[in-house]
Figure 1: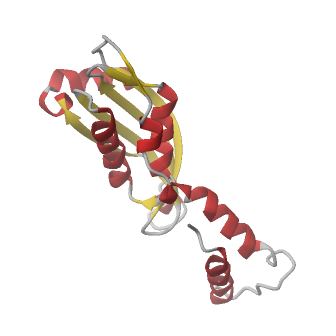
Figure 2: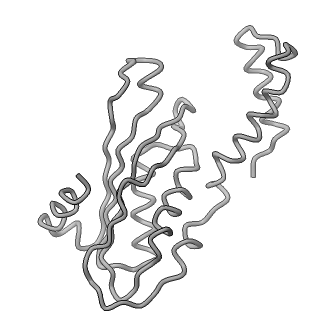
Length: 184
């Protein structure tokens, strides 16, 4: 859980550290606003992917289920700047399916944590494999990182693409290619 008092104190120190006056009219409420914002954008630290993936339904279908273009916003743990983009999630049911909104909720659980994109991708895939027990799962994330856009190399529009896979997707290149064709 976010300790709002500590966050507010930290923001005041940052403001002083950059040479600003935390008592200036426009900044007086900033520590509180940032603390409340952190409660929202880091809510995933208090969430577990088991919850959205726990209610499943029986099915005879064993074809790939894809939810693509799931928008997400996350925070890079290195610079504490946002990265955002789209997640593409697929799995091959083994007798059970989950409501499609639950795939987007699973993305949200992990995106609302400070971390790196590679880890986010793996966490989503692992959650699908562990909770749905599918024949296979694959996740691809395309994201723009503000740490590359606003600072450092300053290359807006560049995208980082990561993917993770488990089960049949690891073994079957045709299946991988089918997924990549479907998300493009």
